[in-house]
Length: 295
Image 1: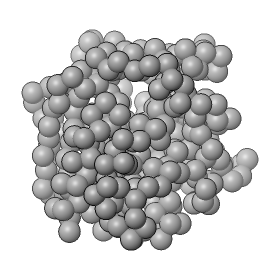
Image 2: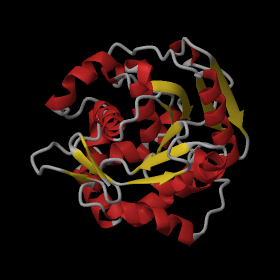
Image 3: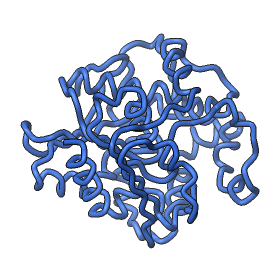
Image 4: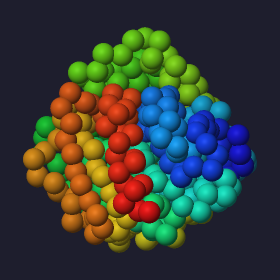
């Protein structure tokens, strides 16, 4: 545990203390155990791995009851930067997916001097364009976002509160239809959803990205910078699961123009949304690849 910014952050650490640093960030609704195999592989290759619980997950807690329980992208990015500062990490390779990929992209875009390389899964350029969030996607994509619209309602808040394990278990199955995971694997991560701030942070995240609610004034300046859709200049690899039930995959790389440095995109068959847990070797190899490119 360490105090970092507005949080007391719980995190896992593996590998030599003097090795190059890789910070690995989980998404919703997952936790640090998504990286168990990845951290073993990277630690064996000399990396110091830091895997934090995001705000609203596991043992991570807000230091003050007055702090807004925001789940917005600026808050997630600011949390990551604060963690790096608290741990005295000047520069690191960042890897993440879903919410974690968003935090990594935010720091890579706005503070590239702190980032040796980036591995981002799914959407790739994971910074939200909130100003244009009202523009509808194609119907098939909208169908996959049903849970986001559910969370815009009081019924959805109550559903997540009462049925958080059943709901998140369903999302695991829908989002990774070719991944065979056991109940014990799910339960190991689902314990992190018992955090007292989980529901409030999740609901705010899925409402803020559509401009339905206001953000935290403490990170408004960061949100304004993100509204400019800044490019990412650090060495980057985007990994997409061919069976991702949220973002899907497309032959057309629609966000490649957002990356101005060394860049590679790979679509991996038989992998869904929880990329590092489903394909840990591919993810670990990508971390090493961008780390070498950023040396």
